[in-house]
Amino acid sequence: MPMAGAEIVARIKAGIPDAEVTLTDLAGDDNHWAAHVVSAQFVGKTRVAQHKLVYAAIGEDMGGALHALQLTTAVPT
Amino acid sequence: MSDTNARIAEIVNSNDVVLFMKGTPLFPQCGFSSRAVAILEHLGVPYEGVDVLQDMEIRQGIKSYSDWPTIPQLYVKGEFVGGSDIMMEMYEAGELQQLMADSGLTAA
View 1 (cartoon, each protein chain N blue to C red):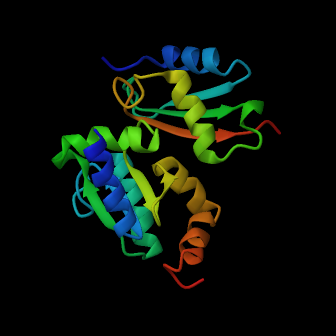
View 2: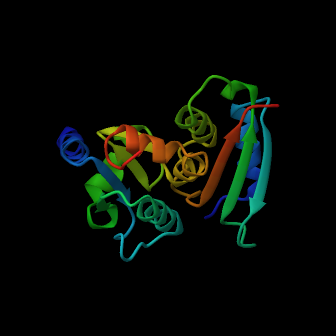
């Protein structure tokens, strides 16, 4: 079962409470997503560390039920 | 598992640039892997492509090796660099070109 968009956003916000999440359905199939996540928790962290925070928030379904997520991260401006 | 870790370490330490991917550079089997290949081809650096679909141990093992849940994964000089999204961001910022140059893999 693919992961619905609302669930993706809910999990990211549960793990990173200040996160602003912009989710785009890339293929219109509720299965291929692009997420842009902005959080003050990313300040001073490498891109790899920032992405790991998001993956950790999504949990073990990342790479499984949710296999197609384009991810970009940024710090608040 | 430790055997798999040792195999992965051997691969990433004996090749300057390694891309763990789904499919091969000529026939990527996933859009993310295809994008990673396109970036490396554009940079013009020689790299070793490892098709994880041909090796279930590496397919699972690479995720714990780097603590990174998705494929593709790029390694340069034995160090994990990121997945295809990070490769793209670094490429657009000129950082991937710089990393390759700093690693002596391309002319600066």
